[in-house]
Length: 167
Image (tube, rainbow, N blue to C red; front, side, top):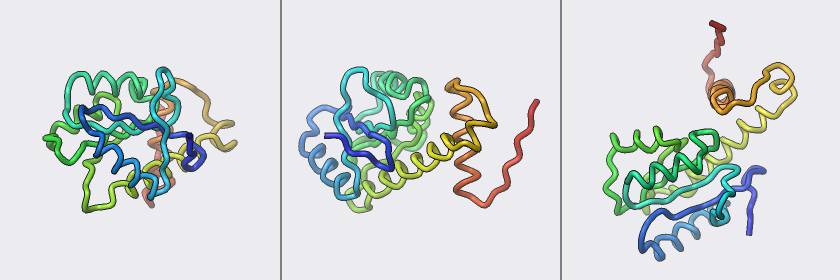
Protein backbone atom coordinates (compact mmCIF):
# COMPACT_ATOMS: atom_id res chain seq x y z
CA UNK A 1 0.00 0.00 0.00
CA UNK A 2 1.53 3.33 -1.06
CA UNK A 3 0.39 6.62 0.36
CA UNK A 4 1.43 9.87 -1.21
CA UNK A 5 2.49 12.61 1.16
CA UNK A 6 2.24 15.88 -0.69
CA UNK A 7 2.58 13.89 -3.93
CA UNK A 8 5.70 11.94 -2.94
CA UNK A 9 5.81 8.24 -2.22
CA UNK A 10 7.52 7.63 1.10
CA UNK A 11 9.19 4.41 2.22
CA UNK A 12 9.96 3.10 5.71
CA UNK A 13 12.67 0.72 6.88
CA UNK A 14 13.50 -0.56 10.36
CA UNK A 15 17.26 -0.98 10.78
CA UNK A 16 17.00 -2.55 14.20
CA UNK A 17 16.68 -5.95 15.80
CA UNK A 18 13.57 -7.01 17.69
CA UNK A 19 11.52 -3.85 17.22
CA UNK A 20 8.21 -5.44 16.31
CA UNK A 21 6.27 -3.68 19.10
CA UNK A 22 8.00 -0.36 18.43
CA UNK A 23 7.48 -0.84 14.69
CA UNK A 24 3.73 -1.24 15.05
CA UNK A 25 3.48 1.78 17.38
CA UNK A 26 5.57 3.90 15.02
CA UNK A 27 3.54 2.85 11.97
CA UNK A 28 0.30 3.64 13.82
CA UNK A 29 1.60 7.05 14.95
CA UNK A 30 2.77 7.89 11.45
CA UNK A 31 -0.61 6.86 10.01
CA UNK A 32 -2.37 9.09 12.57
CA UNK A 33 -0.16 11.97 11.39
CA UNK A 34 -1.12 11.32 7.77
CA UNK A 35 2.00 9.39 6.76
CA UNK A 36 1.46 5.84 5.51
CA UNK A 37 4.77 4.76 4.00
CA UNK A 38 5.36 1.50 2.20
CA UNK A 39 8.12 -0.93 3.23
CA UNK A 40 11.42 -0.44 1.49
CA UNK A 41 11.76 -2.93 -1.33
CA UNK A 42 15.06 -3.86 -2.90
CA UNK A 43 16.23 -1.19 -5.34
CA UNK A 44 13.25 1.14 -4.84
CA UNK A 45 14.63 4.11 -2.96
CA UNK A 46 13.11 6.82 -5.13
CA UNK A 47 11.59 9.59 -3.12
CA UNK A 48 11.95 10.40 0.54
CA UNK A 49 12.36 7.66 3.11
CA UNK A 50 12.43 7.01 6.82
CA UNK A 51 15.00 4.76 8.49
CA UNK A 52 14.27 3.82 12.11
CA UNK A 53 17.26 2.47 14.03
CA UNK A 54 18.32 1.44 17.51
CA UNK A 55 22.11 1.56 17.24
CA UNK A 56 24.45 3.79 15.31
CA UNK A 57 26.78 1.47 13.40
CA UNK A 58 28.96 1.43 10.29
CA UNK A 59 26.28 -0.77 8.70
CA UNK A 60 23.62 1.88 9.33
CA UNK A 61 25.85 4.58 7.85
CA UNK A 62 26.48 2.46 4.76
CA UNK A 63 22.73 1.78 4.46
CA UNK A 64 22.07 5.54 4.62
CA UNK A 65 24.69 6.17 1.91
CA UNK A 66 23.03 3.61 -0.36
CA UNK A 67 19.40 4.61 0.22
CA UNK A 68 20.12 8.33 0.02
CA UNK A 69 22.35 7.81 -2.99
CA UNK A 70 25.03 9.78 -1.16
CA UNK A 71 22.57 12.52 -0.26
CA UNK A 72 20.76 12.80 -3.61
CA UNK A 73 17.54 11.40 -2.08
CA UNK A 74 16.25 12.61 1.25
CA UNK A 75 16.15 10.13 4.09
CA UNK A 76 15.12 10.78 7.68
CA UNK A 77 17.08 8.85 10.29
CA UNK A 78 14.92 8.21 13.36
CA UNK A 79 16.51 6.83 16.52
CA UNK A 80 14.36 4.67 18.78
CA UNK A 81 13.92 5.98 22.35
CA UNK A 82 16.10 3.18 23.75
CA UNK A 83 18.99 4.04 21.46
CA UNK A 84 22.13 5.46 22.98
CA UNK A 85 22.72 7.99 20.21
CA UNK A 86 24.01 11.34 21.45
CA UNK A 87 24.17 14.69 19.68
CA UNK A 88 27.73 14.41 18.31
CA UNK A 89 26.91 11.01 16.82
CA UNK A 90 24.01 12.49 14.88
CA UNK A 91 26.55 14.25 12.67
CA UNK A 92 27.73 10.82 11.47
CA UNK A 93 24.19 10.16 10.22
CA UNK A 94 24.14 13.45 8.32
CA UNK A 95 27.60 12.77 6.89
CA UNK A 96 26.35 9.36 5.73
CA UNK A 97 23.55 10.95 3.72
CA UNK A 98 20.63 11.42 6.10
CA UNK A 99 18.87 14.68 5.34
CA UNK A 100 17.74 15.00 8.95
CA UNK A 101 17.70 13.03 12.17
CA UNK A 102 15.08 12.68 14.90
CA UNK A 103 14.85 10.90 18.22
CA UNK A 104 11.50 9.12 18.44
CA UNK A 105 9.85 10.54 21.53
CA UNK A 106 6.80 8.83 22.97
CA UNK A 107 5.74 12.04 24.75
CA UNK A 108 6.23 14.56 21.95
CA UNK A 109 4.45 14.08 18.67
CA UNK A 110 7.43 12.94 16.60
CA UNK A 111 5.15 11.54 13.90
CA UNK A 112 3.67 15.00 13.25
CA UNK A 113 7.18 16.46 13.07
CA UNK A 114 8.10 13.81 10.49
CA UNK A 115 4.92 14.53 8.50
CA UNK A 116 5.71 18.25 8.56
CA UNK A 117 9.26 17.59 7.36
CA UNK A 118 8.00 15.41 4.48
CA UNK A 119 5.44 18.07 3.51
CA UNK A 120 8.15 20.73 3.58
CA UNK A 121 10.38 18.63 1.35
CA UNK A 122 7.47 18.17 -1.05
CA UNK A 123 6.87 21.92 -1.17
CA UNK A 124 10.56 22.50 -1.97
CA UNK A 125 10.50 19.83 -4.69
CA UNK A 126 7.34 21.35 -6.20
CA UNK A 127 9.08 24.70 -6.44
CA UNK A 128 12.14 23.05 -8.00
CA UNK A 129 9.90 21.52 -10.69
CA UNK A 130 8.22 24.86 -11.43
CA UNK A 131 8.87 26.52 -14.81
CA UNK A 132 10.53 29.50 -13.12
CA UNK A 133 13.28 27.21 -11.86
CA UNK A 134 13.47 24.62 -14.65
CA UNK A 135 13.73 27.24 -17.41
CA UNK A 136 16.34 29.39 -15.68
CA UNK A 137 18.56 26.95 -13.80
CA UNK A 138 19.97 24.00 -15.66
CA UNK A 139 21.71 20.99 -14.18
CA UNK A 140 20.97 17.54 -12.89
CA UNK A 141 23.91 16.47 -10.77
CA UNK A 142 23.22 15.41 -7.17
CA UNK A 143 25.37 18.26 -5.85
CA UNK A 144 23.50 20.82 -7.96
CA UNK A 145 20.12 19.47 -6.81
CA UNK A 146 21.23 19.62 -3.19
CA UNK A 147 22.34 23.23 -3.57
CA UNK A 148 19.11 24.19 -5.32
CA UNK A 149 17.06 22.51 -2.59
CA UNK A 150 18.93 24.48 0.06
CA UNK A 151 18.44 27.77 -1.78
CA UNK A 152 14.75 27.13 -2.42
CA UNK A 153 14.17 26.06 1.17
CA UNK A 154 15.78 29.19 2.58
CA UNK A 155 13.94 31.40 0.09
CA UNK A 156 10.57 29.71 0.72
CA UNK A 157 10.58 29.10 4.45
CA UNK A 158 12.44 32.10 5.88
CA UNK A 159 12.38 35.85 5.56
CA UNK A 160 16.12 35.85 4.87
CA UNK A 161 17.45 37.36 1.70
CA UNK A 162 19.19 35.02 -0.71
CA UNK A 163 22.20 36.22 -2.64
CA UNK A 164 23.76 33.88 -5.18
CA UNK A 165 27.22 34.76 -6.42
CA UNK A 166 28.99 32.99 -9.27
CA UNK A 167 32.66 32.45 -8.67
